[in-house]
Length: 380
Ligand code: LLP
Image 1 (cartoon, helix red, strand yellow):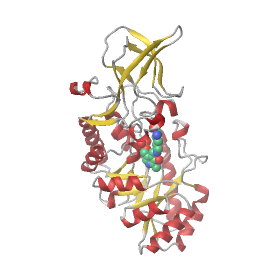
Image 2 (cartoon, protein in one colour):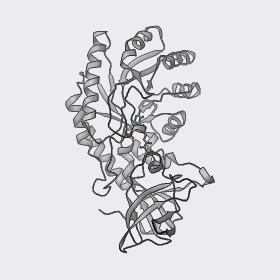
Image 3 (tube, protein in one colour):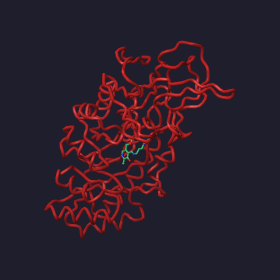
Image 4 (cartoon, helix red, strand yellow):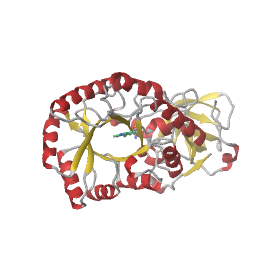
């Protein structure tokens, strides 16, 4: 179905984030239906969008929460996620964040280094607890996505490199307040070529055999998140192909009897249900370029400026003849550009413009640069 803004929102002050909760529900239904046959455990990555109305629906659909800060752990608990459905990942967890998560008795910490394991052990001991831990390994698998969101290569700061793993496992013997329950890997985000997940599965299979040889049988395998969405045709592909995604792991990951496989999807769950709605402030034409200057900018959606990402742009007010525009924001940075040379129906001051697929890594990455006010979120 082509995108339509609910008519009453045409009067809403711009810019604002519009979330289509019906599409979120459809997405969650498709996700849980695809995860069920293989009994995959899905933890939603809050970093993609942490608005309470969205989190509550995600929790009601039965997903857990994947958090990367104390603030996200707190938000997940506020949204009603049970502590034993909360995992805490991140390459730089502070003592205060770890203490809060320990006190809440969350399900698992995804740990990334020996120094972190030592701190987890010390802080857990002080609270008279044991920290359940999955080791985040760096599998050295190229996700073939944007360099800034590639995480599973040795050059990236994330995870424990395979060469160091034996030493890390040995160090666990002396850490009485840390219990190893799983392996974790996350190789990147906006992954559209599923063969990289097959490659990740093969690496994890080898590691499992190696670990079993050392006497470790782990109840949990966490393969991370990263499933991409169609930014170019959001109306044709509003819901990602979850069946193909889980099918890849079903086919390639050798799961032991009773072993649980976890995934932590963010973008694939929430990207398509969100739209940044903006108004055209000015159309400025020079001999070379025709600019459509919006009242939304990189402060509301930084992805094009930061990664050169594509978001589908639609003029919701005009049916005029198509003309090329550079669509830009009002921020004092040349990188505050949403698209160059995009064809839009003839555009005028006051027209409403939709920047699509903004539900993930849109509002959460908003900033107050230029003392901009925070744009509102509306839900329908
Ligand atoms: N698990 C870990 C350990 C992660 O680092 C991430 C994302 C996820 C799960 C969720 O990945 P997803 O399913 O959403 O791809 N700001 C960037 C994306 C950064 C992703 C960071 N990590 C963007 O706008 O494209």
